[in-house]
Image (cartoon, rainbow, N blue to C red; front, side, top):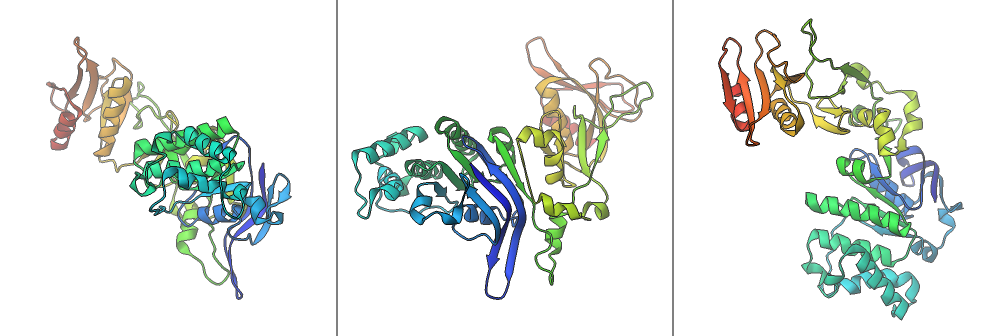
Length: 404
C-alpha cells in the first residue's frame, strides 16, 4: 500500500520554489488499477515522477508499506517500483526478449547474467502480456501497441509490487487503447500488483479503473504572479441542474434524449470564483461510480460545451441549438437519431411512443419505426404540411431538415 500525506510537488532552485500541486492526500491499494486524470499542466507527470523518486517532493510524505520512500536505497526502490514512461523508446539491435530481460537488472548483479529463474520470469512476463510470439522480433520493427506491451512486460519482469505508467495509451489507436487498459486491469487483479497510470482517455478510465485520482490545476503559481488560465480552469465548480420533463397536457417540454439531468455552466462570474476549500481538495479520489453519482466528475470536467448524461454515465458534447424537433421512438435507432439531430443544432423533444401527433405548434415531428422486414424507417412531418415523408437513413432526415 502507498500513502501520500499532505504532499507538495513541484520544482525548486536556489532562489525559489515552483509548486505544481500541494496538500495532496490519497492511498493506492494492492490489486487495483488507479487512473490519474487532470488538465494539461495540472501536474500528472510531476506527481508520477515524485512517486517514483525521480524527483524529490517539496513537502509532505510518501509512504510505501508504512516506510518513507526516501529511506529506501536505489536498489530497494528498483525492487519495489517499476516505471513505464510515455516517451517512445528507440531501440535498435535488441530483440523483444532481450529488452524484457533488462527488467531483471535489479537482481542479476553487475554483469547482468541471467539464471534459469530469470529466464522463467521473462517468459512469464511475455505470457502475461500475450507477446510470446514476438520474442525474437527486433524491438524497432514493432507497432506502437506491441512496443507498449513489451515495456509493460519489462515492468512485470522487474517483479515489483508497484507499476507506474505515464499515459500508456498516448500513441495507440482506439482498439489498442481498449486492449491496453483491459490488459492493465487484468494484470492488477491476476498478479495483485498496484498499477497506477496517468491518462486523458476519460471514457476508458471510467470503464476500466478501480479508482480515479482527479488532480486539479493549481490556481496561483506564486504570490507575485497569477496565471489567469490556471485560475480559469481550476476555479471552484458551480453547476445548475436542468430537470427534463416529458410532454404533458400543458405542452411544456424541455429538450431531451432520455437524459435525466444535464450539467451546464452557470454564469461565468460564479464559475471562476474559486473557494478557500479548494486547497484541501486539490486531489479527489474514489471509485468511478461514486464520483459519477455524487456529481464530482461532472463538476471536475465542467465546460459550457460538455454535459454529463446520467442515464448512460458518459459525457456528451453540447452543440448550439437553433431549433427544436419532436421525436418519438425507442431503442438504438432513436438514440442515434437524437444524437445526429443535436450535432446539426436541433434539440430533440422526446415524447412517449404513440404520442408523436401530440399538438405542439410550429415544430417538425419525427418518429422511428421498424418495417415488417426489419428495416428502420424515419417519418418526418413538417409544420404546416400534413404530408408525412419517409426516409430509410438518418442522413436523408438531416438533409431534409437542413433544407427546411
